[in-house]
Image 1 (cartoon, helix red, strand yellow):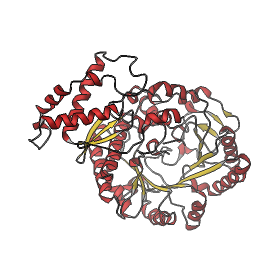
Image 2 (tube, rainbow over the protein chains, first blue to last red):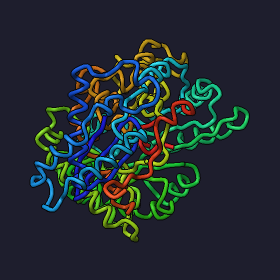
Image 3 (cartoon, rainbow over the protein chains, first blue to last red):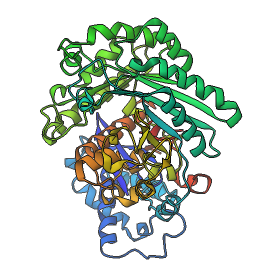
Length: 486
Length: 31
């Protein structure tokens, strides 16, 4: 499978199964498109010899294509695809030969031979690698898009006790088996409303690291309302990552992130976040915003944060019910696609200057990255990653907390719902038809199980709007790599 | 090549024999 697209003047071809990425000229782009059409027709007509692609990933149908006929077909429509009227048939032959080289090098039109490996991999024994501790089901803001009912938790406010936190750490140590590196996220609500317990849990985890041969890495998310320089110093000493919630421009932030009585929170938190990011040396943090139907021009919010000096930025689409007036709608997508393209272009312009910054959804490691097993087997929710409520109940991830259909056990008795765990374990790209045929599957890993469930009623479903946005982000992330590699 | 510039990427098929954190970093940027 290949995917080809044009963005901001670049013509890009992704060979999905090999991971190869090619930046091509106009005539090559057209030739590849014609070849792809013919290969798909041959495949539909059953021309594939089922034994021919067992070894290697070269497309077995490639030899059936007629170079001369394809080049003549493309030559006949050259007026439609290039400003140059001087293209000769020899140039098309030359470009075709380059395509032929890529195919023989298994870098173009390769076939996907991974499925049997992944099915076996999904049956492997798993360990718990990370916990999301809901340290506070309480909040001092009343954000309109909050999954916890504007921070009110439907009246069920609760803070995690140290006792529950200690048991959660013990549960993680026991269920991580021989794995050394363990992640713990302090999440809420607002974690700083239960800061003393955060500190006690960190101290406890550190105290048992050596005897258990573990290395804990902590993350804390905060809205900044209670942030002081003293707390910043503690977090800088103890947290491997911090997430600072700010949506962008003041009016955008204040519209969705007010205090309970209605006043905006931007002026309260922004200078603290700027100070905090500087104290962390502009690394190991994210300012993390949410965009909604109310600010489809979200690239301005990203650039607002960048212009304040933040270097690690994530601004993400809201997760909302269809009925919420701020939910992202299908008709919003063309505007959002333009915004993503525009942001990518600006990031290329800033590349290599003191104004450059990282954007979470455009961070992609083409030369490294994980193996195909990880790329195709999902995020780990429900198996390797669990959320813990203030009372110690276990859920597949923070987005499932409170939905009793997804209750998995508790920190006292451990995992009880093993059928549900196995259902999450079977979540892989090949289990989802839409993902199986998607060019972004090796960069997306099948998407978010919670979004899929909320949208389709099944964790094996997909979230249509989320998929379209994800594909656009992958295209732009690769475009940035292509444009900055010159 | 005159018409094609291939970016430096990891060949995924090489990770089948050698391969096998949780993600949400994103899987595309994971080490």
